[in-house]
Image (cartoon, rainbow, N blue to C red):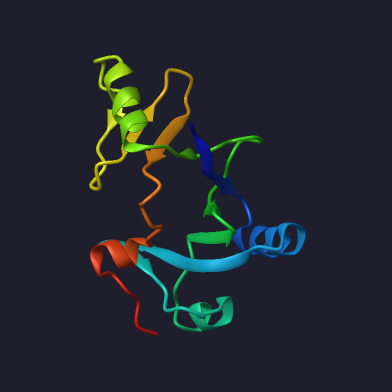
Length: 148
């Protein structure tokens, strides 16, 4: 059985999208991140847009959540309807079965945690997670935290 985990989107106005999704879907900010020359960094919990701007940091991704659903939004210039990634929660057995059914043409994408990420022939990226995996920011995964 699969369960929708997240749908990552590119949006032209990250801050306005954050506000809209918070209001419409009653979501909370889980964390915000900034892409720097040497990697992705997580801002300290509770760091707002003004604090980041004053520190000269440009927020590049916001993770919103409600219940078990996560809505990652990335700053970008998408075509209408662009989806960055579709995340599915599945048992480890189901993840392994999907991995084994993928063609051997390099569709499988590297993932450091043993999850299954792959690009399909239609331009979509799929990411399958076991139910036990906890959502972690890039800062939590790599120890890359911004100090404001």
